[in-house]
Image (cartoon, rainbow, N blue to C red; front, top):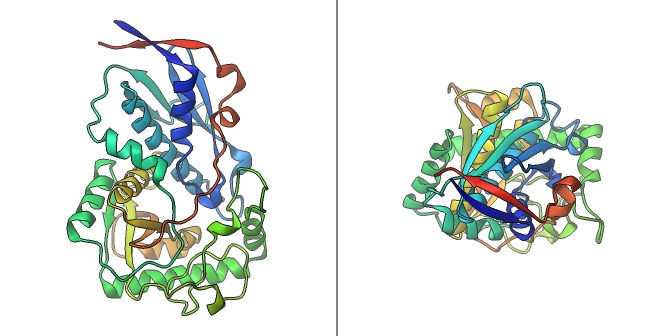
Length: 334
């Protein structure tokens, strides 16, 4: 049995990689704790940053934490350890969503490109060009989701139109629901307003043709003046789904989502998340009409400008204060 020191800079880097993950409204609903004896990082839900009206079941919170879990797995492997992950490891602690133990030697062959991509990945709510995404890239994205136990399907033109119609209806309902609209506005971050929420520059324009229903955080009137150029006429839309709809499936969906987004980033493909229809149970059911799966995310892919980055909390802000040793002996198996 060999012993390697996990020093504070490396610990900070691991957590910083994890929190680079996307989250609904950039709520960053996670907190971390290091268990020194087993060299295990715990990821717990930060319930106070849950979206009570938009995400009452906590499904989106779990998906967000799943994204952070995947980033942590990639970062741990990049630094030479084998990430031993467990989801919902202790039923008596419902806020403990996942653990990652540092052990052994990494066997994650895709680590180098995915590790670099996690620092560059960001959502783009901007218009994309009409350039098609090559079929081999779409295939690789679907394989990335499959590797994490999920399914990513790319519907045809008619089905894409139907999915966008459901998203438009959800966006209409969100704007008409006073509590949801107020909750959304609360998460628009004012300039210099801290490290949580969506900064104004990241909101993006609205499609005045109302073909691609981007989320309108502020319920502002649609205006052609908000456009720098038209949105794409034929968007590439994908549905991410899981065979079941339990808490573990939500976490796995987040892991699949992040792997897909990182693979897209490697290929310089931009992505934005159309989550609105998933926030209404009747519309969510219609996203997978006739299929025995549960929809977990709608993703729009394409080529275009890189969207602005949203702020992230630092490792020291999300890691419990008693988890800052000078060094930890990581007992590696092997």
